[in-house]
Figure (spheres, rainbow, N blue to C red):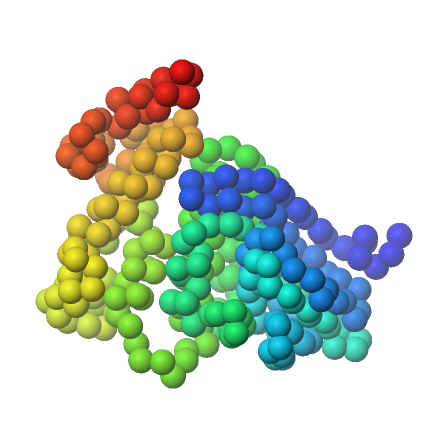
Length: 277
């Protein structure tokens, strides 16, 4: 048995979570001088380096990576990475496909030409990866919801890590926060305070950019997440309401019917009949 086989290694594959598709998730300690590629992968890979150091090459770009860095491997992009001589890597990773990932990564200052970001709160991100590994193994609707929340939580850690010199974009930050915390109750005032911006000014900026108020935008996002849960899980209506940030099931039902012209229950029944026919 070689060095790698003696160490913890966990792969969990093929988990659908609404608009996310997680193919793999794992943790591994590699033998010294580990390397990958040059090769291309089919999906997005987010890799967090808990220990070790080395070099990452993407296309013609090359950069150093080290302890506490997270880097993104883009689909169909020639990538090569290797550990320094004698360096032992311990890493977490997840492989996923989701349209929203392509929208979120630029908000984090991550791009194909700049795919690395240093993490400030290493303890929290490592704890979140461990929770994600645990939840993947359960394979229940509730666990899948928790996995989705944990993936967004991982991304939210990057919003406060490795600050760049780019001008601050309050609207992008607000949208990332809302998409990462849509299951929680919070006010526009609390959101503006977290961004350290005047509430009225923030609402005006948001409406100019998005065409909706922050409350309208968040409600629309929550209702679309509810549609996904109705289609992809067996959760009760009350559980779905709570999962997307509505404490009151009746209020959730009213908002859903106002938006889609039918109740959540009728919507689910219609989808089930459509699948049968």
